[in-house]
Length: 294
Image 1 (tube, rainbow, N blue to C red):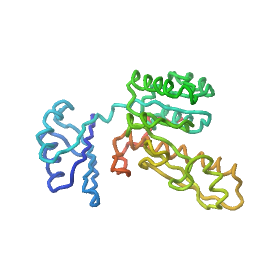
Image 2: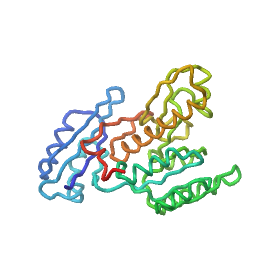
Image 3: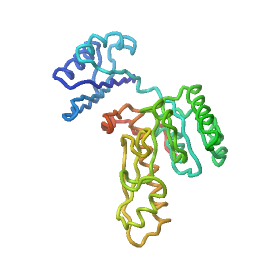
Image 4: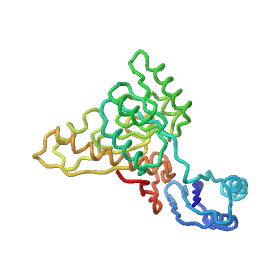
């Protein structure tokens, strides 16, 4: 069954929902799921609508007629075919738990993406990536060659047509220029429940403070290190009896889950940037279903 979605952001005012639903109904479309949020602090409106074109409307015809609806509201809008898989580049260094988790979810269809490349500054995961028939690129990064290395990175992204870059524990800081160029299209997993314990060795910091909860945070990457808009977070309880090494092992499970959920939100167009925050709508029914198990 063909299913499309429409995403909308604009200044909040009355009549937006009516205009959108009336337009879709006139085009023979049946709305199956809809989420909206009116931010009273910023005056911004956000909406995501899933719908079925019951009378054969195509994305082209829907896009052709939408400007007349959007003009009166100064909307930023986009139609998407929910069956199309977003092209993704994954970047990893020497911690492979998030990469392996993503590969498994991708393999069973729980994360419907098209992994077009894996980039690393080490060779540790070349074999596992190539065994999945995914192109592997080793781009070594040093202080001296960082501009050239990032140029190589961007060539991989552009040549593959990737729409999203995932930092799956990639342990290199991206330049301000790259962060700005890819704004809203790079997702990172941070091994801490931000904004606490930023920077290096957050689990060690948490252990030294005697915390009872540790967690992970997935966020969009910006030029401000560890300060990007947060997409997803989760925590796990720890006690005084755990060691710093326990914190790391327990934290890695949380990191993998949080990163996968953040990617799921982004690829299903449920994540909206809202200044230095995000609006994350609930998943549509059926969007977590796997094509196969095991």
